[in-house]
Image 1: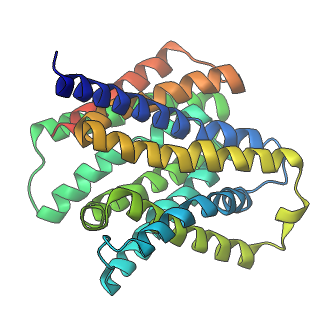
Image 2: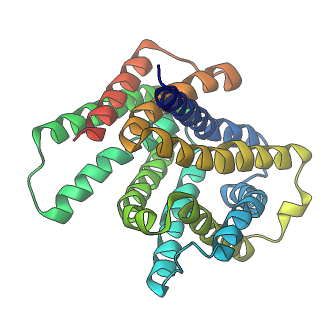
Length: 302
């Protein structure tokens, strides 16, 4: 085997490892949030604020690096607008709705509902180009919504009407993230993935801090040690490291293979929720998960 082939294989497996680690980090997000919510004084925006405050230094280093790099193309005013807009809908609004929903629903259901965003991307694309959906797209939608309907009905029978509030909030988060996914493609091509991630996260962090200042009285200074530890875990293991590992993995193996690998996310969350939070795993929940994953897989191939 030639040296170039060996290097290519190593890059391939490195990319797979990075993507799986990133998926694990993102999957653990709901677990850390649910653990933080065991303290009744913790609300969504306070937890988001500590997460962002602890993430800012890392993204700021990357942003400064690109700002001082003479090889980087200077940003235009339109670029800055897109960064602000996309950061707000993708990392601020979507995250706030997601964090809020986790007050009412389990971590495993949250991850499944959030994973409907590829189906929203299909619907928004069909509407924007004004064409009829393809058979493959309709199959993806049918599988995804059948799966979530099955899991939702099961959870509703056990948890009661509060689950509707939580599910609708996470659905809105998935829709917001779908808008982000559609809008970010051009910005990433122009700016590069790492640069765009750093700038858009800083924009979102600013919005989170502004939101917090207008709705709280610096309660963040009086929280427990556990709260800060969960905030640090969210920042490092479910925000900063997964974001950059995902970008590095995409560079090694490409976006299409990455989409397939990240479909393990709901399964990882299901296992983490079972092992850490004690959430039950039943046959109907597993069936619903499988249906959603098939829908995501098909939507990624359309």
